[in-house]
Length: 354
Ligand SMILES: Cc1cc2nc3c(=O)[nH]c(=O)nc-3n(C[C@H](O)[C@H](O)[C@H](O)COP(=O)(O)O)c2cc1C
Image (tube, rainbow, N blue to C red; front, top):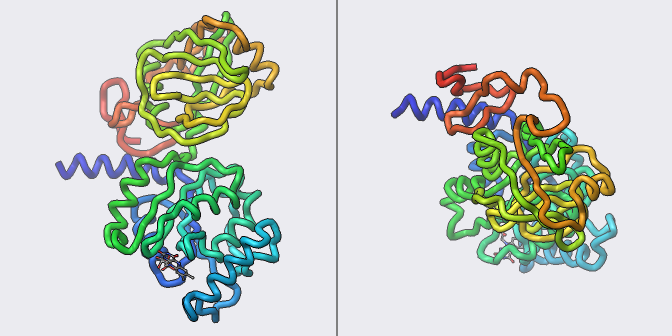
């Protein structure tokens, strides 16, 4: 049994080592710091702590008067940099990271002003990241903090729902974080490597899959055989229809863009040539086609469109690359191993270590 755990740990560590995740936190009285310690025991991440430029403030004094004052200034002029309290410069290059986890206290039901400054100042640099949010409060609910985060970071991809840790469950933070991490769709470094072919009317294009439970299950399915589905144009922005089987969901409200491929309601696939906001599970994106090329390829506006999904391009006009034919390497969980990962794998029915 111990050996199984050791093997599993080796695999998990090799996967975790690929992730480029930054944890950004602010902590006035130490709770968020404890949360970050529990978090980084469970995920490989660099950590940066935000500090106010003025370290003399007692935010809790006079019934939290200064905290209130700082938040009111932001609320009065949220688009003005001068409304936000100054923070120390942060010595981290955000471009190095794909994922960011924000850990912040709640102040008067809002995001602590100090963290708001960091997000306001770095909104553009964070725009292409996948972001998770953990909020610590004494007892107040966190919906306004989530709204603050969305206002300050309008363009990020949220990894999933925010985690709320409060005074009554702070002691259980490790297990709360473990459960929460399992629901989050963070990127891993190699998630952009898994290609899927889409063939429509004799023409084949590639798509790049994201890495989540849904795409892992889809890839496992496509390893057995290509899947052909019949999709119909709808709403002037997509073709969609039943997959014929279900995939694990991690739905979140997203604005799908042209080329995006998503899972809808667990068992339907939608491929977009326009845009639509709904609760979907991301599957991937068609590579390199303009919106008008997508409209042509996806037969925008038509019905009963036969769409074949495959991992080997045997159905379309492009030639399969030689190395796509070699035997595949699987993780101990039975999913396709990512290129370059280290650990214990199964290849040609045998256990290998690489
Ligand atoms: C200025 C200020 C305002 C606060 N307002 C609230 C509040 O409205 N509701 C609440 O439940 N907790 C409130 N708190 C408590 C913090 O959210 C809570 O103690 C949190 O765990 C602090 O995290 P930290 O220790 O990392 O700073 C407030 C704390 C401060 C300093």
